[in-house]
Each structure stands twice: as structure tokens, then as C-alpha cells.
Length: 197
Ligand code: AMP
Image 1 (cartoon, rainbow, N blue to C red):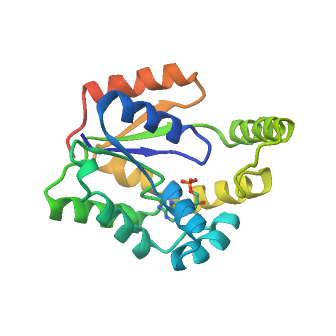
Image 2: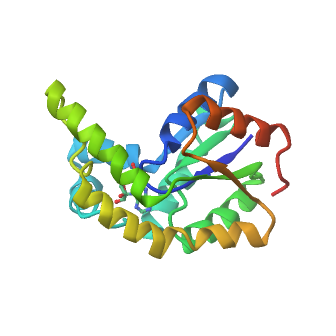
Image 3: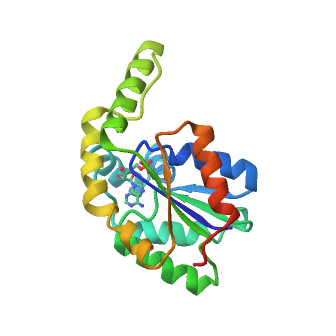
């Protein structure tokens, strides 16, 4: 089973992807995590990524498509994968369709975790307060200022993906304001009746 989780930054896609990973033996593929690993390793992609990520901007489409194309070939994706943070632009979505077709793979569900901007801002403010209190290091792009930039990029560049999947009858929506358990239950219901892709 191959799934895409869409939605704005901080909507809970990563949390849901991890739950699905455990329950269904799927592999979570978070392009954000892959880029953070590249930043930590200090390689060429990582050096380029740090600046772009801290500014809340997007990495080049071709690079991200290549990263995902190689990743889904790995044996740990054999039972299926959950894309979290990819595709982020219409060109990425189109390239994904083409590359899946080329590899003979299907998309079983495209699920939008929908959360209004102001709720996301409130969530990050709570998180910043908690991490300041605990003394834990926050992600360098995890602050209100960067979130606002990331939300603008989301609305300008990523939200246009939604009609792309809607047109082809593949988009399902869940209300991300509910509890983690309720969101999971809604996703499970959708997966019980996956769309053809
Ligand atoms: P995330 O953890 O998914 O919120 O991603 C963190 C940051 O990584 C984003 O703000 C972008 O700068 C970059 N990024 C992650 N995935 C993509 C993608 N599919 N295309 C372009 N940039 C991405």
C-alpha cells in the first residue's frame, strides 16, 4: 500500500505516518527528515539545504524527485511507503505519477490532514514554550517566524497539489484538529476503502 499524506507544516503528518508505519509495516519517507540527515552529515546537499530550510523555502524539484525515486527502490519499501512532505509542488506531483508508473507502482490513497493556519501557529507557540522550559534543542526551522513563511510557501506552492489530486478523484480529507487517535481512525477508515490511482 502506497500513501501520500498532504497538509501544512505542523499538521501532524509525521505523527500519523509513524503510526501507520507501525500498524501496516509501511515505510515512512519524510523528505524533511532526509534533508535534516543530509544537513547533519554536512554533505553538499546538506549545506545547500540548511539555508533553504531555515528560510522556510523549498529545495529544487529535480533534486527531491531523484531523492524519492531512489529511496522507494530500497528493500524496506517493498511492503509500501507513506510519503510525508513529498510532493510539495505540482511538478513534484506530476513527476511522482510518472515515476510510479515507470516502476509499475500504484498510489492507494492521497490524504490531506487539514488544519487552519492559526491553529498551527498556536501549536508551535505551545511547542516553543515547552521546549524552552525543558531546555531541549528545537528544530532550527521550528519557530513562529519560519512557520509563517512555511505557511505562505504551502499556500502558494503546495496547496495547488490538492486540486491536482481532486480532479483525478484521488484526494481524501481528514480533520487534523481532532485528537491524534481520532485522526488515525479517520485515516484507517479511508485506507479500508482505498481509492484507485
Ligand atoms: P518538513 O520536515 O517536511 O516540514 O520539511 C522541512 C523543510 O525541508 C521544508 O521547509 C523544505 O525546506 C524542505 N523540504 C522537505 N521536503 C521537501 C520537498 N518535497 N520539496 C522541497 N523542499 C522540501
